[in-house]
Amino acid sequence: MISWIQNALEKKGRVIFIILLAVVIVSFVFVIGETPGCVSKEPGAQTQKFYGYSLNAEADSRSNDMVREVIISSIVNRGQQPQNEQMLTQEFLSRIALLHLADEAKIPEPNQAAFINYLSTVPFFQDSNGNFDPNRVTSFLDMTQLSRQFDEATINRALSNDYRIQQLMLSISPPGFTLPFEIEEQARRGAATYDLSVAVLKESDLDFSVDPTEEELQDFYTQRVEAYRTPESRSLSIIRFSPEAFTSEVADPTDAELQQYFSQNRTNYLNEDAKDPADALPQLDAVRDQVVADWKEQQATTLARQASEDFVYALFDQEISEGTPEFENMLSSYSVELETLPPMVGNVPPADSDLPQSAFGEAARLDEIRYFSDPIETENEIVVVILTDVTPSLIPDFQSVREEVLANFTEQSKQENLVSQGEEIRTQLSDMIAEGQSFEKAASSLNLTVENFESVGWENMTEGLPNSAIRRAETLPENEVSSMVVTEEGGNFLFVQSRGAPQFGPDSEEYQRTQNILGQSTARLFMSSFVGDLIQAGSTGAQSGGQ
Image (tube, rainbow, N blue to C red; front, side):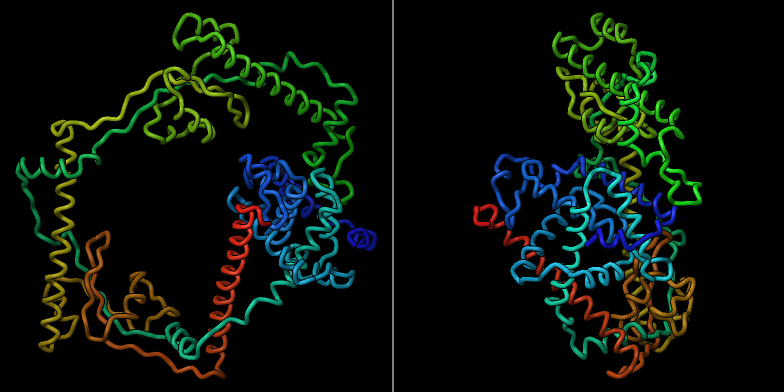
């Protein structure tokens, strides 16, 4: 089926699209390398079956192929691979469960006409105007097969199964359950308008002072003593093994080695300026110097990695302690040195560090006996993290943090005073309005700043209107003062003079639009729950050995 499309499409895709796909496929190769973590490495996972698939993709080529399907489908349908292990696992399980149901429902693979029609509806294969662009199919096939990670059969199976899943979803997805009153209420809510006022209380206008006793501060400190605990601090250094230091040890590659390296990494040398897409993929002779340099860098990186592994093993095998003459001799013999890092406080890596997060994850597990990490690859080199000292976590005595306690006590007291003043002002405003005064006049008499807004709503959010005002106005009765909402500058009160909302009959455009939105929402919830139940059923069967 895919071959028919390739033969029928004579033109190659546009260069920019090829380059875009190259980036996606490079990422794809990386994820495929991380595939085993997608399900489970536990010994029991090799024998557990999820709708006939092993839960260990490492041990089962069929499950590994399904992971590849998942990534191809994700690239085609969303333009990117699953972004983390959790997403990959969820899509892996969902796809297996849905294909199991498609098998049960006897949904066949598409014939040639149905398959072409399906591809034409996929946005990934459409141009900027939404029209099907066959060249994009060809470009995708060219690039994916150049990645050497999967073949035509895998691509064909992934897209064909996408079609089957689509047909399954169309057959079981409900139209979306809605109630007339729910539709009308939602439509009116979206179109409602309000005449309202907002009164602002500035904290700076309040008279406030606090003079706590030592006993009050001591009690405040005692009740929150953990808040003043200083976290553990780790003094770290790193040893860098740079490939540049090993470049002189690398000999020139043979023609066979260079050709093999180029074939495996050809997409790294795409010509972005090529006018003809056929010229975007260069021949070796055209980029030989760059390929040789990259090959040598790869070999130097391998040597640097080996040196770092030998270094770490020697520390372990010879039981060399940090800071001893033997340790210094090791540094000298490997022509490396310690580079001090800023302290690692708690589990927070030092700011502006160029090391990956995994390096500090390892650093957090080091101790006096195992004070060195395994070699860690960064973007440009290999590093070993060295733990030189640990300052344990401790709770300081009251006197050493008294000023901080006083500041916290004062801030909390100010907030409590603000809330208390807000409750008192709301009561005063409500009493004045009950006596016949307008909200604006009452608020002004209490030194509040008042701003009025007319005919505002979700479809008319006037500048200066607080973000939460419409949501609060929906449930606030007319001519009542809201509770004060605390803001950065103090707080504000809301007052609704009047509200209005048009009526929408079943024949109105707004009613039908709202019905469609609510229907899609309930349908999505149903399908999400349905797929979740399928996964749960498969997981239960896997644990019991029933699938």
